[in-house]
Length: 353
Image (tube, helix red, strand yellow):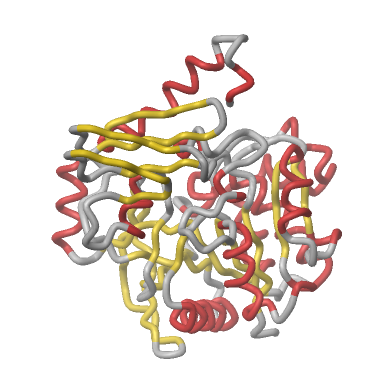
């Protein structure tokens, strides 16, 4: 049984809440949002390559319309390690299909890890140590290991994991059985979770032996597995659209949580840029900005020749990309998706998506 990890990057997301910078053919994972010059996808690959031991063991799952972009951004990725979904069916089909393919190539004892392409993670050394612990746990136990993020606020935007009985220590990291998963609770419930000290945010990162999860999927998502095992990826149009949390993690008795110690952000919308970059500055300026009595603003321009001028603004996001300008209050960035729905209803503006 191998102690190495086969990382899989989930790179099919839309990132609509970073519109107008994030578009259909240029979603969030293809963007550099931290000023590093590397896209989130490239940073994720760089982070995982030491764990994979090289490009030959790194995999990516993406949507058909994004495949060329992935190839351009990751030219060293072997073509056979890029799995292209004919249509998006959420994360359960992506996890099931890629795990089947990895089991065929490496065997069912292969330890597989799944990682979203659009997260920001701080402290590479601790990240690698944590994944080594998760790999050890998955190797020694029939465990589907999820990485839990310590909450720093009663957020209603994340799923929560309640830790149960201690399950030992792995490479110095304590692990726990999972008592339950709770999807995006209301504020009062989130405050209760935070006060208890027993809950983690669900990071969407998982580690497990291929055979363990395939067997659990056969039990808890038989319709998904039957179609994939009988027809392969050609079954995609018929597959149920389900997240891996709903299809498996909320049902399995083999879920474990490993609380993590590295810095993490899911970069869910424009306000995440402020968490990463603001420091003690009045505004976050990723643009040439001239401001009068402006504070708490996030300002971004994709063209270095564009200038954003603000007067008397507070707690707003201003984004200029091509021929589109977005201006939104920071506490309403979650509503960007609703604005995009209106664009879809306008044939004359649909090209802006």
